[in-house]
Length: 322
Image 1 (cartoon, one colour):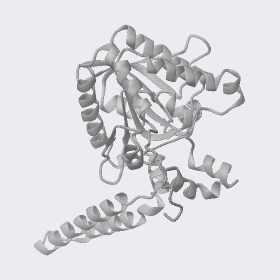
Image 2 (tube, one colour):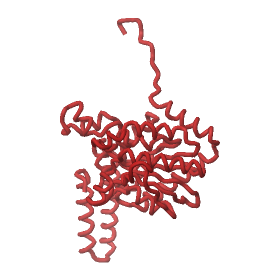
Image 3 (tube, rainbow, N blue to C red):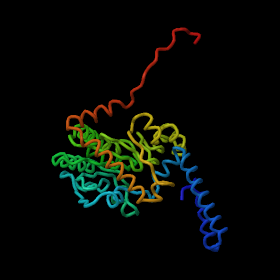
Image 4 (cartoon, one colour):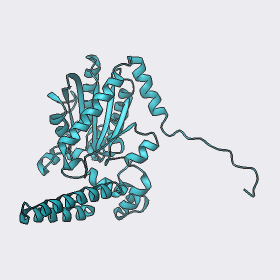
């Protein structure tokens, strides 16, 4: 339970207590329906007015669906591919062939892990250079066979360790972005949780870039930003407000194309419903992109990213009194 969800859980407990003690009378059923309506309205109100910092908490929720959850609920016949042919297999990035409602695709996504053992194995979803080299290798394979690429972004950032830096972390992220920019097959990228820094951008150059409703996509984590600007992580909430990294802001700034609505109470409340919404969006986007030629796909991707950050300057009045 997140701190701001306390009223929701209090009302849920009230409903459970009422159900265990109520009889089958008409009045009891009426009161129960009233409580459930109140729960729905309360959840809508709270989740419809989340602050940026609260959105970060939802994006990091332990029960939020990860890449492997979407692989089992959205796709069929997933076959995982391993290794980068240079160094090793980075478990922070999961790749492989799959089918999406009969369409053959290549899926690439960050993976955090559910328990401590899995998280340590996948470095808490923070890829090393070999993870991005693995992703690039599989993208080229997808291009060879004419398969669309679907990327799920969910990372606090690329791994910041000494070994990763020695093996060219920054360089390989730049190479991955470059490779994605000229890939001749459709690319769809979806931020499913955290979209942190270059770790997210490394597999984030697509023809379509979308975010789940309660995810964030930022040049830096709020804690990192607070540490740089105010020298303390305790200002993370203030940094989150300043960064404007929630889906609504980024759609307005044209950084992303679409926002995928989450189930009531967040994706962590209903994995199956969230998977259904995800599948609908992916199929719709694939249909739109598959009609484009290879050259059109590259130009579409280039134009899409060139539009980010465009603004209009107005000449200031020469009259000093205005």
